Amino acid sequence: MRRNAEVAGLLEEYADLLAAQDVSYKPKSYRRAAESIRDYPAAIEELAADGPEAVEEIPDVGSSIAAKVVEAVETGSFEQLDETRAELPVEMAELTSVEGVGPRTVGDLFEALDVRNLDDLEAAAREGEIRTVSGYGETSEQNILDGIPFARQTQRRELLGDARPVGDAVLGFVESIPEAGRCELAGSLRRWKPTIGDVDVLAGSEDRAAVIDAFVEWERADEVIEAGTDKASVRSNGQRVDLRVVVPEEFGSALQYFTGSKEHNIRLRNYAIERGYKLNEYGAFDVSDLEGADADEPAAPDSGQRVGERVAGDTEAGMYEVLDLPYVPPELREDRGEIDAAAAGQLPELLAEDEIRGDLHVHTEWSDGDLSVAEMAEAAAEFGHEYVCISDHATGPGMVGGVGLDDAAIREQAAEVREQAADLPVEVFVGVEATVEADGAISVADDLLADLDCVVASPHSGLEGDATDRLTAAVEHPHVDVLGHPSGRMLNSRAGLEFDVEAVASAAADAETALEINSNPHRLDLWGSAVKRAVEAGATIAIDTDAHTPAEYRNVRYGVHTARRGWAETADVLNARDADGVREFLH
Ligand code: DGT
Ligand code: CA
Ligand code: CA
Ligand code: ZN
Image 1: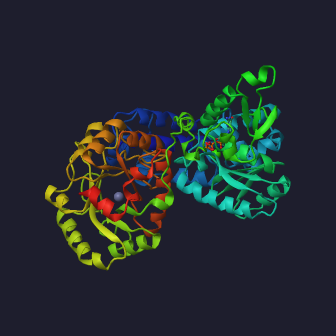
Image 2 (image 1 turned 30 degrees about the horizontal axis):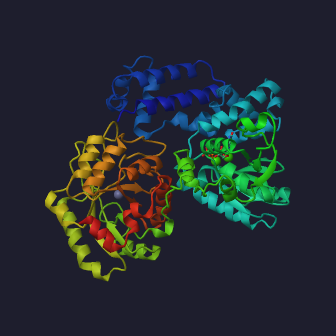
Image 3 (image 1 turned 30 degrees about the vertical axis):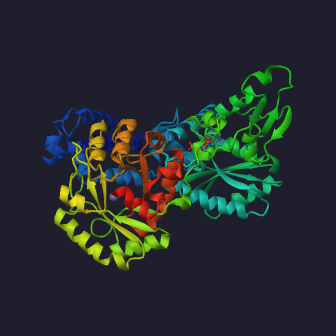
């Protein structure tokens, strides 16, 4: 992989830090060098391997920068950058993503106010501190404040697997506040999106200020971003947590509103308007008897109006009921046809967490897992599973550092596992995780695959571009049972393969190969919309954790909710079947 962009990024960061420290000229030459390196046709690591003189061939790169480039290629950083980062410990990229905030402003505000990140910046602007810094006035303060929401949107999003534990903890805490009544998570976290902007929590209370006061004292809050009379935001474990507190009788409508998605809410509000109702966070209002403008046009989201007769809002289900709709589970609220389906009485009966009976993709110390087969089987039993498939890595493209087993080792492992199977507390399927090569071939001998109970095949390298043919070939392979993490995507870092989901899913349905939802929070691959299309094409889904340690069995819930986001019902899911049902599918 070309590392030109990575190295250019380090030089640009250094340039920004120097500029923030008011150094002149130097930042400009580092930026110019960065640009040349990014555009240079040859891979920077190949030049660097030949030493600084070779790097100096790149236009705008002199000897001092060339030496830093060689160091950066070798170590991922260079000494002067590390030193400058220590002098100026700011989130440079985050802060400069605010329109009008450049490195100089970052340097000034760090010096004067110890502003290090976006939250510090927002707090300083909100409290009127920025206007006290020389060279800054009320206008620049207001501009910064205005630019923050947009900057936040463009930030890296948290993984569901990191945000959910924070959400669970904060919900538990808010529920323990004596003045709090009903409490619930809202927003994207309640819809189980793969990545999360911020954690939203809602509480109902007669004494809203008391709940806010208690909330900002949460022991796991590292910092209070803002606190008002009915909402507050804190940061915990690097994540922003928004709490809103509403009066008890508006809890249901507020929960419906703040769960989103925005697109679902717009669709629902328009559906309501056509039937003479107005929906907002305060309730559902019958406006059919009202004269004039309001009744004809969709309510503005924040109009805050309580008009007409209030007919629902105490409970969330009531908001749908008043429109003669069944309750729409949060995972479906993405405007993917759920309101039409609800109106037609055709919402799916979604798979539930406790319906999963086993895991068909598990690693042991035979490849890169932590524990023995027996230990992983015992941990599976403890977790509540009835069966597991031991699917250690086979060698193949993308398996580096001797992680994968060759055919002889797979045979040896299979024999050993079969020997001990009777003594294990769960049913064990003997399997492998083979690699789907670039042409769709499978990296393990056919007769060996035929001898195994369950073959998971996954792409591990060459994870770019269109792969419809590659993945179709894999699912049509006579011995492949499960297509593992089909796209190979890594959230926040790698987009993964593109492919025609319908085509691969219908091939999989015909070949009776399952498509995996890999529950690892970095993957969630397949994801909701792809699962929906796969299920519609008739494919069977396997929800696996790819566990390398016992703790990772718990990730299955992320897979289950991803399946629910894809409208999957119990019958669509292979490992919601009992061991006999799975064995039947595998044969
Ligand atoms: P996130 O945090 O980016 O992962 O996504 P959400 O969906 O959690 O969005 P967030 O935290 O900005 O707001 C929570 C919910 O509140 C959102 O899903 C829908 C509702 N909401 C917020 N602002 C608006 C708005 O301007 N219009 C509408 N219709 N709904 C909104
Ligand atoms: Ca949110
Ligand atoms: Ca929020
Ligand atoms: Zn795996």
